[in-house]
Length: 272
Image (cartoon, rainbow, N blue to C red; front, side, top):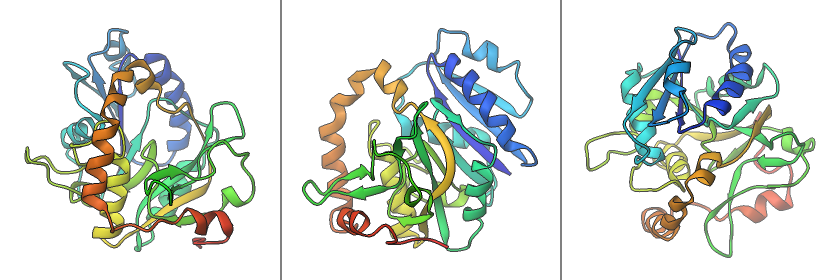
């Protein structure tokens, strides 16, 4: 079973586009799509409730929860089995082919893999939005590798990274729920982050703590608007300093500063 998790707030227009491109990708896949609506006023709950019976919309009272809290909430609502596949999927995504998800699942089926990310392009372009995540030597923090560069053959190769973005990411339910236990008792993503580095934290938990590989799938063709909801609610950016300090306190010395290795060698850490 593949459980897909999407958070949304006043994004019905984006969900409609996402659905049109997503459903053809799921042909032959046993799936359930779980959408948490954060108090939208654009008719999202009413519209989505009329869609396919494998698409579930869960109405939440407001848009106060951060990304980790929202994902943990909808994960628990879905009650997955430990061996179910778990996909984090932003609402501002459009699939450009019908094979991307199958390619990601193929990689996830390898026993040494714990997380699979995707090649993401800026909407309507051939420019890379995400081709893996590297750690910058100057600031020691994560950044998207080759962001805004034109995609090429090198970008279409599968590679091992420490981190991939959570905009489109695939893992397994048992790995997700064992990543972190919050003070509230909720398991999954670390809820101390506010809209930044929470996906980085999840990847490092799977990679460093659980000793599973994080793979960037270069064969996908997926378009991403990037932070569409954040643009509607820019107050979340006020938490950036908190996020940086919390991340460094938790992970300092436990990850590799690796930007140069990837930049200097397009064959570095290729995966099968």
